Image (tube, rainbow, N blue to C red; front, side, top):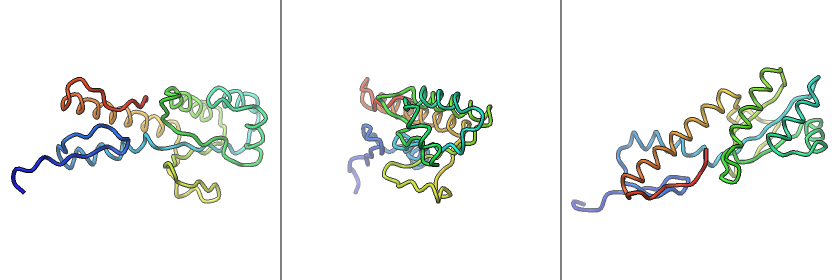
Length: 169
């Protein structure tokens, strides 16, 4: 109806609602904001000659115990499944990126997947998950940061100096 209030929408991440500017902007921002809710699963397909270095780097990246990391790798189980972006550990994506780059440089056979929250991970059927490597992870990190920056700018322009969202990228 004529004279009705503009349609309002909230990002999946729970950010402050803002007037819907146009469909193109919505299609651009919503998929990117979904990365905030994603998790990463890491599988290592054998330790090889770099066993001590791999374990040490896993401990630095994800605070894993030596025995736990060794056991799950030998069993072929995920080394970890954790939130990719977590305000309690905002540096994790950078540490993970460094780890994947190191794996690639040293020929460590690994598989990393982006998993949506609530999605069940089945290591025997990994074709349904988005496989990530260092370059793809960097792209996810950059697109998420750009999306959050855009959301913050839109929130500032709509509601003065009010900050939108507190996710760290």
